[in-house]
Image 1 (tube, rainbow, N blue to C red):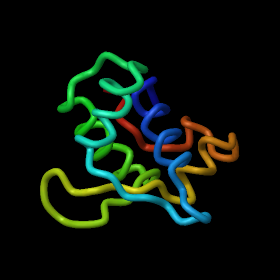
Image 2 (cartoon, one colour):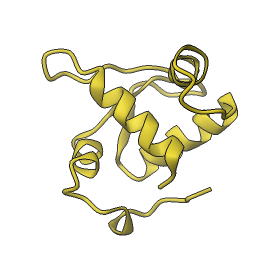
Image 3 (cartoon, helix red, strand yellow):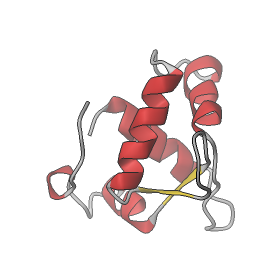
Image 4 (cartoon, rainbow, N blue to C red):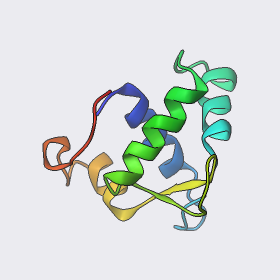
Length: 95
């Protein structure tokens, strides 16, 4: 896990509406975290790659097929942020 992973997961968790996860495309997440909030200085391709990796690890779920599809946080993603699931327990590329 790295700072981009944590920022993505926290951002998507905080967007829950009445306990329901919001799905966003990598471009929307990148725009908000980089351009609007200035939290990170990473490229869109980094966000796309990390969101796909987080989905492979079960922390995000892709809601459509194809490139640039929206993702939403999963219960495992919430458990990781709450400290109930350790990064060491995940098969995750730290790239």
